Image (tube, rainbow, N blue to C red; front, side, top):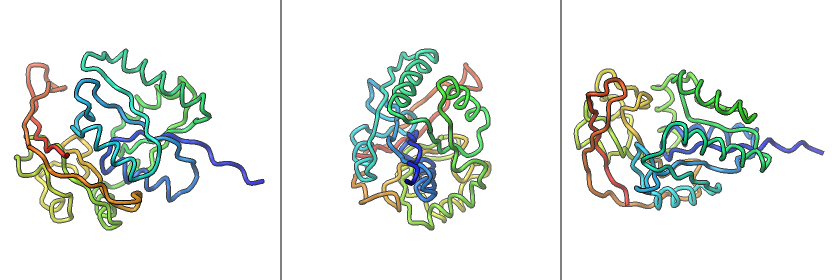
Length: 233
């Protein structure tokens, strides 16, 4: 009898890196991808810095065809409370026979170390299908494969209002401001993936309003960072 593939849950952000990492896992065919796991704001009903509506997240995941689990985070959730919520979710996964997980991270060493330190506590092994890939080569391969992705958030230090709401294309990548990673891996921009080889059908949506919001600068508590957002409906 052929051995069953290990079960895996995928940490889903709705954007290009998650989509391409999921594609790589499906192509490798080493795991049974059981669940897509996403955190959503309890008050806003949106995904963190992507600003994506929960309703559109659910529509996207329906078009992929893998079950979705949402963890709701309050705006007052502390780092310790967040770790506890995630630990509870991981324990639930373990109880369902899921001992593997995966992320779309590419080169942020401290983030990978944090994730692995949390996972080792419950005995879950992490996969990083895109790890250390050249981000310029990666994004061009992503586009060549037929993935379609919309820019939903962008750091106003580098971009103006016109950047959000656009599709990520080769021409756009070739004209990014100096110092911006082609995949936005340093948080320069965030995306929503709506079509491509992981989708059973294209996700339908409309462009909404564009707004600018300010956030605390993690590098300087007295400073703020502005981001442009394009709402998708």
